[in-house]
Length: 367
Image (cartoon, rainbow, N blue to C red; front, top):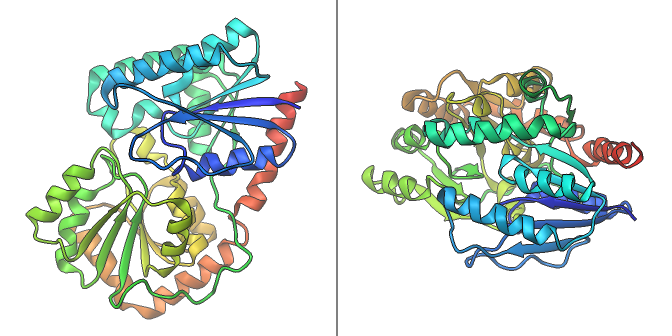
């Protein structure tokens, strides 16, 4: 049985992407171990088809956390035996590279995003320089890997000389997803789910809600969470904009179909945002709710085939308010987009994308 280890720096209980990947591989005969970070506030992972390992760190943020976690991860890996090591994003590249060279095992890079081009890194030039150096040295040594769309595939090929497979992070299609969604509340709910991070347009989205007759639920945590709370208070929107914090995937799957519409918004700072293909984009489609989405190339390509979203060319306050009001009031357009969601989710689901994942790992094992 092929032993595969995956490494991330985040919590394991909220990472639906890695849960899907690891479950698919474990259910198809691989011995899978997922290594992540232990946070005091997180519940322990439930029993899964794969093994979960949590590393505890003294530091929780800044470069000190990444340095500590990478050191702890490397020395933990030295105590393990495996056939393949897979780094998830650039923040675990170094220990995986060192281990694979030392132990002479195959290595794979899961390039879920262009790490050094995230806004929170782009705006800190010294920090970006460090991550760019790590990517420049490590990624060309990971000849096998996959990413989430054609734009990132081409970027990695031009920048690092690697030819990665495309495996999108699509949600599982339940057998019993309803075609008529039950509303979450008496008022219409606009939903943002995902990381509450810099670059996700909260600076304009939150004040835009003053012009919108609906509630905004922000589900998630991240490095902009405290700032988002301050913005809500500063604009006196505590009754209209609700910060729930992170929710377990099972709870989120219950909530999402009850929202009226979703939001997939990014600022155009950094290639990572411009070339993104966010998980939430597909989650909204699977839940059967139209969404407002920034008009970036990866989303525009899907929109051309499946018109499931109302696209905006900028994320200014008035633009977002007008877009939300458009979908809240134009029932004909809303129903057209919703019907397209029902059509699209028959194709844009994990059951179909899983086939690509299994073929990729089969080829890695026999190469």
